[in-house]
Length: 107
Image (cartoon, rainbow, N blue to C red; front, side):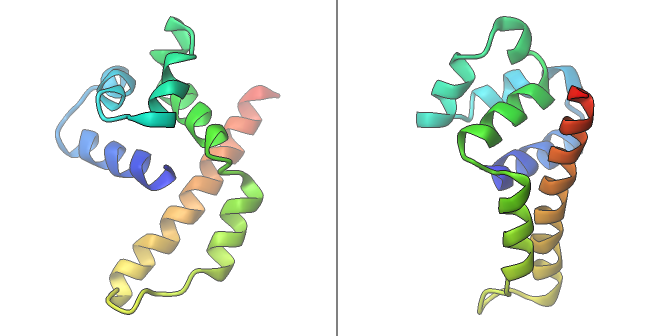
């Protein structure tokens, strides 16, 4: 799920989507448990991309410890180039950074 949201954010930035529209655009791509999670948010929460992302990450148990563990144990896939592996490992640190930023917002 973390990879899907970061892929969407990259797509949205590259295509000039306004940040205010990200969560409603992301909603159209969700299915199953992710869509159910989105539906359970209040209308106000559903408009805030960071709140949507946080709810999805919580639903899929993507925690600080989980990201830290994934970063420490990640190894390149057989068909993965060095540059692709750098992006993959950077995604794990981005997820961890996002969770830390959200934690600071709560305090």
